[in-house]
Amino acid sequence: MNNPLRIGGITPLTTIDFPGRLAAVLYGQGCPWRCGYCHNPELLDATTPATVPWPEVLAFLQSRQGLLDGVVFSGGEPTLQAALPAALAQVRALGFQTALHTGGMYPERLQALLPLLNWVGLDVKGPLHAYDAITRTPGSGAKAFASLRHLLASGVAYECRTTWHAGLFSVDDLFALADTLANAGVAHWALQECRAPGAATWALTADQVERLGARFAGFVVRRG
Ligand code: SF4
Image 1 (cartoon, rainbow, N blue to C red):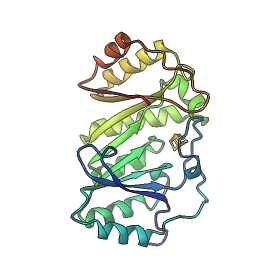
Image 2 (tube, helix red, strand yellow):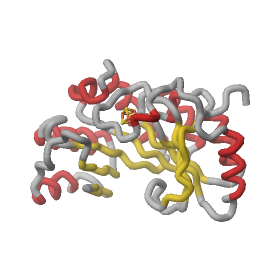
Image 3 (cartoon, protein in one colour):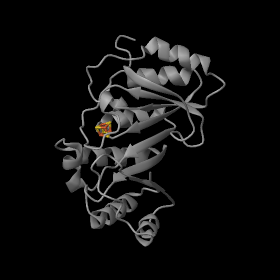
Image 4 (cartoon, helix red, strand yellow):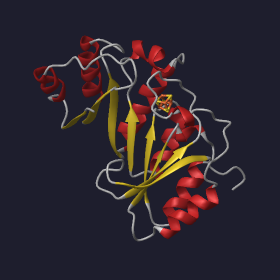
């Protein structure tokens, strides 16, 4: 591989990042967006060298054959790197199922990757009008929603995730987003409390949460 995937860290074992599987998580270095609540700021700089060289990543995964079901590519933003398709193919050749966590900023790349994926966690950061302020990147929302369309059309298992606090966008906008997702055909939505420094308090009643979730076959709230 000429330009191997740059990995900024590994979680050797997770039971929560790839539903139903024991998995390792590989964190791709670099992300083109700059969300204020980003929980992995050390992974944002695309020029930072790998902390775990790719051959070491493969050696680690070979040592886990038969012990792990899958490998999650997270970040940062894994689809930033042109080496991702080859890396996915290598990991699958070792016998692992594969998952991707993405913000969906490269819809065409995501579309091409979907045949190599068993599961996708797609961030839906907010309604279209709120996207650029959240990601600090012009045009980000259109790309994310294009990725959503590709994902839903593919039939690959997925979860859409929205990280929210009341300072990002209003409760009314959250209900409108839920409608948008349900109307687009989303069946699995996770609403995650944003607990970044300076985040507004969780401003939803139990009744509002129940009404938000009623639109989806699969709905989960993650707080704390
Ligand atoms: S898209 Fe994800 S990794 Fe990139 S800045 Fe936003 S939260 Fe951080």
